[in-house]
Length: 279
Image 1 (cartoon, one colour):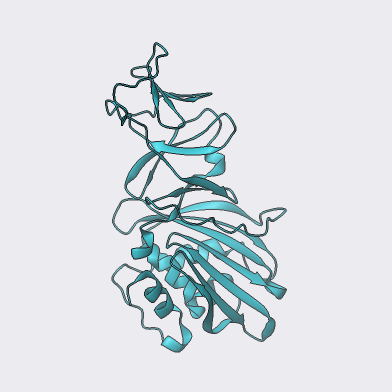
Image 2 (cartoon, rainbow, N blue to C red; image 1 turned 120 degrees about the vertical axis):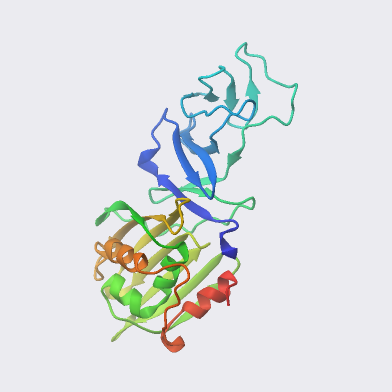
């Protein structure tokens, strides 16, 4: 998928990354460690020591970096190394612990899966209280199935529990962001917006009587057609609380090479496939 070259990818829930802990995760084939620095900001570093290849998983987080449990070297937040004696290591200038772009949005830790950092994810309206507990589900499917399901008004109607109708408007379709807007059956004052920030992070929001929304992070696990679906939702008229389960049910039924026959006039699939370069 062309748009997955530089994506924000849901790597963990914010609550998973507590102060002082080194949390291993795998993102886009990269083995990473998530941790919080002295200011509480989440950082994402390569899991192995660049000097000798030792895993840093059993190391410790110190005020200025990660201390290896194997040889005692300290790897600072900028990637440079300090020997156990306290001497800054300069004999190999290129020896640095690589860190990756990371941000937190609505309880999700997002890591950049490419060399180019994607634009900031727009902050959705902050809910006073989640109506559904943030949930992680393992699903046998392909990440593209999530986005295509949200672009199909028939499937979207089932997922949200409201009647979404007609072809979507496309207010925005840049290299980094796709925005689809749907009408709600018999409610002209209501709209449903689907946004994709790359192919692995999406949001759904509604205005009017069904006001509410959801943030959806899709993380390939490395196994064939296997992903983790992280969702959190808030709001009123639509059944946002039940959305996560229905979305997981739908995408589990879709396989990577399976083409669904949906009339073009009722579907946003052509828009999605053009955007990702599959048309």
